Amino acid sequence: MPLRPLLSGVKVVESSMLGPAEMGGLLADLGADVVKVEPPQGDYGRQMTWPIIRASSGEGENSLLSLHVNRGKRSIAIDLRKPEGVQIYLDLMKDADVVIEAMRPGALAKRGLSYERLREVNPRIVFCTISGYGASGPYKEMPSHGIAYDTWAGQVPVARDERGFTYLPEHTSIGIHAGPLYGALTILAAVINARATGEGCYIDVAQADSAAYFDWYRIESWKAYERPDDEVYGNKSDNYERRAPGTAGMKEGVRYQVYATADDGYVLFMASEQAFWKNFAEGVGRMDLFERWPGSKFADHARNNHELQAILTEIFKEKTADEWIEFGRDHNTPIAPVHTPKTIADDPQFQHRLPWIPASRLEADMLPFPAHVTDAEIPTPTRAPDAGEHTDEVLRDAGYDDERIAALRKDEVVF
Image: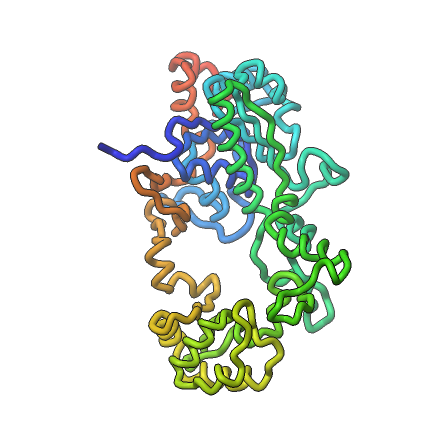
């Protein structure tokens, strides 16, 4: 018996531009039927960002961003400026579970497709709007792009070049991915509730909010440090001294630190528990280090012990990065690889857990959805559609016959 996709039977109607389309993309990865409703000219995200990838057919091109966030979807192109186009949208969502507005909040309402009107047609519809700063607050009308949510959330340090000009350093984008992720999670909770109660709901997701929440540990730590020292302090191994929040507090670490290896690589050494530190010392034949600096039972990084740091620096130069990974496995000591986005693909754990979906299938080599499921299916996604690629198919699913579809094409309502 064939396995059933996890979100089989969940139908999503999505109006999206650019990166926020990842919300529907996550649902499509899990097997939902996601119909991307595009304007006649299509989502201009196909030309945004880099790299741009020429289609294997030799005709057309798409950004990697568009190919990834729209994979697994179907596309219909509708002119929502026309009443007939609005009616088609209403017909599409009559039996849908979800409508996603991945644009500025209110974009659909301006076309006569407000949450209230959609509820009149389908009371159990879950309506989710995702935008930069959300549908409320003083920033709600501000135009923005993805990095703005990370700078707003305090996640991007400002750098200066040799001429003294400020610039954005390389960093991991958070908001553009966390927003769709939190939104998809909330959508699924809302769909479960709607199927139980018959009542949908309105969801407002801001990518900026999501970037901040993703970094809740640092933000909440700074807030906690506004309280007196006798109420909020460090842990026992730090003599209760407050550390800078998050990874900023790792700079002075010695037994939890990055070290260079014999092959000019790096590994992350994480013997912050006393038991792991002892295992390491035994494994390298240096029990004298443990006897001299046994440390606390938990969370002891041997901060600012520069003498020990110099010794460990020389020890780690004795083996290659791969040899240290094997050592950690053999001696029950946490030692991890240190990669870049370019080198991670050569790692055997990456290759085992995240096998590439080849460009021959999706026009670009892409990572699979990062979960493994037994007794159900996470389907291999299909190629991101061209604008309007499935217009006729989607309309037929909604009950339109070929004669009516031809008339709509002639009147340039659909494309």
